[in-house]
Length: 327
Ligand code: G3H
Ligand code: 13P
Ligand code: ZN
Image (cartoon, rainbow, N blue to C red; front, side, top):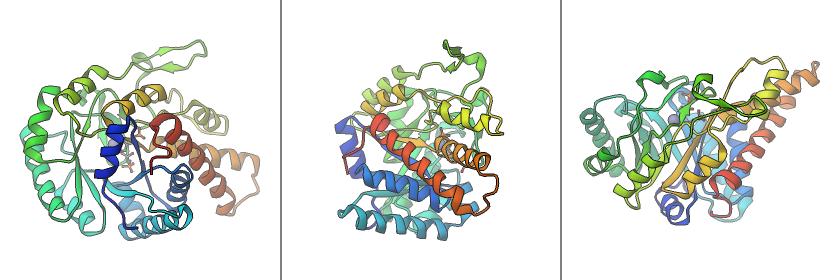
């Protein structure tokens, strides 16, 4: 099967009260771990590539690996397994165009840091080019906090999405889905300790997501697919393994799974997860080296790392996104 757009996936997800997992990919083991979980769980899938991933691995390598995953899915699953390939967070038309020309079925233009008018102007340009090529576009309104390679927004520069803006934005841009800011944030340190409370185990409990904003957005955009970025849960079991094996990630905290499940049952059709993949992989590799200090063959530590990604993704598909069995 060819790579598909997210249009059909989102329609079914919206109507079915679940969300599609959009997982960031950077190398073969990550792609395999995610795809194997999606095949086993019969879950529709979005593989997404950031600007940083593209400069780390090169477009051609990632594209060939993703094509291999699609072929493997078809062969293993024995049916057309829907997989969408998406550019994550581009702030320039040029990269979007290059990914559209290079075989992606979806792109994200992220001009959320610009003025409303400038965001509309650039998003519209990308939408025109993308739609002419059969590609769908995700845009963003409101600004998430968080720091990663290519995404770096300080908490004081972040802002929630204003529901009163969404209808005009979608109408004037023609975008196919909209990422909104309701309190999620990129990276493994989503909230400062001061923003959280602590439970009886001393773990940080973050402030709740702004479901009132999500409700108002979906009231104004009935049937329209909403996206949540920055939605890793930062599982504490991974953080503990990392810290117990030479790592240093104090007070890493994410979005509680039950809040994501609630969002998935509402208008949220796509949930972006990257940091949790990094944590699963790093925890397993650190643990492996601590237990086997003599190992030096990358296959010895990348195989369990790939397995850890697969397990973690399967858990998300079933218990957080609710998209298992929907492919
Ligand atoms: O939202 C950002 C993604 O997690 C990608 O991160 O730019 O470090 O590849 P990256
Ligand atoms: P996390 O850092 O929470 O995994 O978010 C990933 C993301 O939004 C990718 O676009
Ligand atoms: Zn993001």
